[in-house]
Length: 356
Image (cartoon, rainbow, N blue to C red; front, side):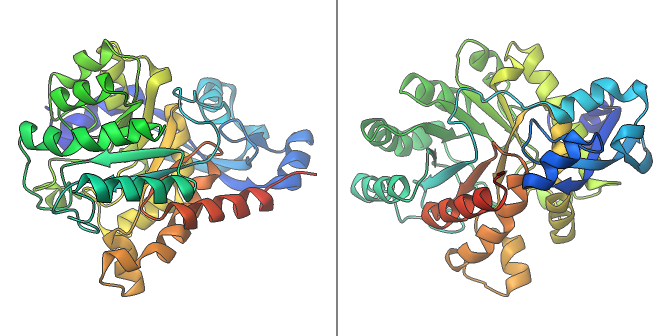
């Protein structure tokens, strides 16, 4: 069941039969005026608003429907997409998450920060660039990546986590393994970021139920070695939401409160280039989950494919542009390598959307 996409979809379908897909988005003073006039509703707590919505009931789509004409039977689904999600105990508002890879084989910067000295320097670069969370990982999850032993993973992570704590950083640990999660949380990590949505290690969810940290569940089918063969979707937006709904439900059933859960649509994981871009255009549909959204697009192949930039570390301008749609969520967490560039973009976006 853990790696069966069809099984995940069936479970998710029971959790999210009715979905509201907001469209007709409005920003700034226009959003305020439209809400006041009764022709728009706040999106995920605002300040963005939406005037129209597609309504998904099972596989049937209706719309776009003006928000004032949405039937009463959709009240609960509408509540999910109009209400702000919990902060998960993390920095509030749009938040830049800096990436610190302490692995020799990351697709972008493998080997650059393996030494404690290099990691310490990069922590300073990320913090000075505006990163309010730093996500540290010691196992590459690029397509075809080899698994890392638990001993090697923690050997790489431990000194980096210690330096992050000394630097006063909000620490996120990027791992699929329960033992590593526990060691990192006990050492001060505030967020566990699991690309497998707690499906890789059966001990992960029960262990995290005993902790108080935030937990990010990412959408992926299969494993890094097999995910590129699992890209058969009827509708990428709907199925990602429903499969994430199943993961959220499973985490809740294990004892992890929804107020601690973030969701990540998993760009580049079991998705083609076309599917990645369609999902990026349709990010507002994630609001149906009632969870804070983490967006991980930095330097990915989907950016290189459309820019003809083969070297991953040269894709930061494309990364900034790709992350802008995520800012429809006013509390989005944007996971990037170049914190300074993304922080500047967030500030410009917020000024653009400010109200008088």
